[in-house]
Image 1: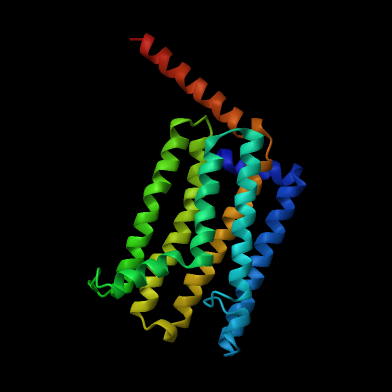
Image 2: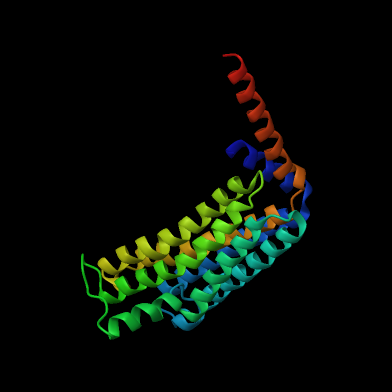
Length: 245
């Protein structure tokens, strides 16, 4: 799968101007935004404009725009390639956008904490436990959507979902694991950990956006048809080996 993805990126970057432009513009702009925001915070300037952690700042609005673009490209991918995996991914990143803009898991955590439904444990605040529960509750319908997509999968879907699973895994790692580490190390006092947390989240969204453009605009035969041929060849080899006994 790794060699197939590398070949896909190389071929599409050379022949697909939309993907090559997205890769350069999105990743370049993301790195620039993160660097400027870090310098901005280091100088102690007003966080409302360029802070990585402020929900109303330009970096976070930029990330939210990338999420919307990703959802749109997943819908384009479904229209072009007719595979359920694109709809599942659109649903996932639509929720990520909803959570980021409406602060879903923060509100769930605050609600559970204020009503005494969760308690601090293991060095984590009650609010943090509640936020994890909020994520868990959201994972239930998400799992059902991905199960539906898996039941109607086609050759190539698994590899594509692995790619976006890595992007989403980086987002969750920065948003949960690094966030908890940030809190444990003093919150606002540990600015470097905060930069890794917030910058990593934005970069993971940028990666997902670039890959959404790649998979939605690629030539079908370079991924789905190639995967189908590989699966057919593998099945043929297994059958031949079985007959040899």
